[in-house]
Amino acid sequence: MYTGFPVPGGAGAGHSRCGGRSSLIPAGVAPMTPVLCHWLTPAVLFMVLIGGPARADYQPLPLTELFATSDLVALGNIAAVDETTFVVEDYQVLAGAPPEAPLVVKRFRDWSGNARWSPYRAGQRVLLFLTAAESTPSGKPIWKIRGLGDEGEMPVEDGYVYPQGIYLDGFVQQQYEVQHGRLQGYRFVLEDFLSALHGYNRCYRADVQEGKRRQVTIHQICDAQALQRYRDASPLNRYLVRLSE
Image (cartoon, rainbow, N blue to C red):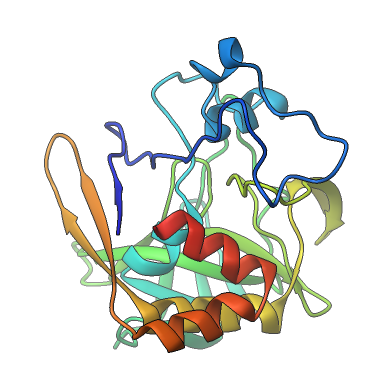
């Protein structure tokens, strides 16, 4: 069972391995010293290395929480963009209940240390992790992207998905050119990433307690054999299981 205690503002807690080596850390990369590890969690170190948000109270959401606690996960194409929102069409709902109205999402706004990989434009394909829609005076629901660092919005292009704004312990982070822009993040075959998402949600359930200190507790719900099959399917699956223990 994994319990995360995000700081105010929706931050997720990362796992740190101090003075030792994770099985996923690439060869040749030295582990952190105890002095650095005292205050540099993996998520904080990630933001320091890429020049991320200057806000000390923010850590990226773990991928486990994006998978298990989003109200809606959808894959689709941006059809229209205005000053505050964008509309997604031809979308596939991967988790959550399908919206009754068109899928309208509040745009991510760049802020110090965090910028979207490229400006919004029609035709971009995105994988979205969203929070519950807000009602508006017009009655049009507007969904919100998860995470202050745009973690819940991932570009999809040429059969790959590019998670960005998050930290994945042991996976190599690189700079990629995608959708006429650049991002610092990770690249996965889309089919494999979605398989990890579906399998994770079959094996785990998240309980969320809202409040001043939001708490997320993740429980295993599949049997040991099913979990073993899921774990063995890919390095990403193994990472997700380790993070959920």
